[in-house]
Image (cartoon, one colour):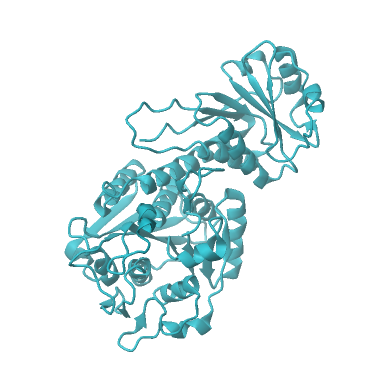
Length: 495
């Protein structure tokens, strides 16, 4: 179960605010930069008159308050139960608003409150600020106790369009987190496919689910997923077409998203060591969750881009039907691959998805998203995803968007000299680059995947680090973060 997604709304604070704007509020957040209140003077006068407080006096009386990002003075009015948060905004940059939102959200998490934040100064700030407020309040559990009451976040009514956009992004990210947190005894490949069907129906998306003989050519997906006879693999294809048509002489771009959807990863025959590493492996389908919900968000926002989303769903179990080290499999495009380590299963299912997209879908942009390698986490920590592509200009665009949304990326090199490590004596490729010991696991995994993308404009996001948080802090809960939903949605919105 989850607590209700926080409600987002607005209050009239532009022009001449009235006492009506204060009805029902429990908290008000007022931005302070360089020890000066940063709100409309009429609104400030209303607060000071109605609540019988002197805001400047409260600031000057606070010791060691320097208006740094997140510094808070908590003030209780003399005549009402409304609490005032005087919060430092630093330089008040766009990316600072995301941090402010998360700090405020954490401050009141778990309480049934109604907070009006006057921190955003423009439309973009309002979106990232609301995202931070709402996402920092996420919770998920299967406890039998009563759900917590919903929180309501409010901003100035001059930013009404920001509310709609933020609601879409927040809801999509929350739903991605829900999928990721769901235990794997519930979250089978079929269960995820069923959730995708429900979302497709709700958002008028077309969807096809294939399994059994229908995925006969998907050698990697079968090799991994057939390890579980109880929860067999399936392939999901979701399509979104915009209502608008392309302008004269300009074709609507076609984006194909491929998500790794390993609903649980034991490592297979190459069993994970130490065993406690497995407890987090219900999150190994975070890539599939991200691309699915980014597609849903795009549909809700009516983005003018065509999207085809492929979910490669399988359970990597240990059984009599598990693939073995030294097996050779044939992928969708006919490429043969020698399996070296069955715990490197993600690239095997993605290879089929990429090959299918290249041969059947003619994408303008081909993007795969996966919790793929521990090497990416070691190199970039849990704060950045590794981005691999030959398109440096678009990589820069991804980076800029990620800095705003919080889904941060770092472009990594595709070192062609390492490609020789993918050679095999008995197949076209080996999948773990064991031929030579370059010790660049994330790089060689990307080089392997690139072989299946043809000549497409291809991007590989290794989200093994930021897809899961080790602590409940900032915007993220402990566990699945929903990384990639906002990044992909905002990127597609700018195509």
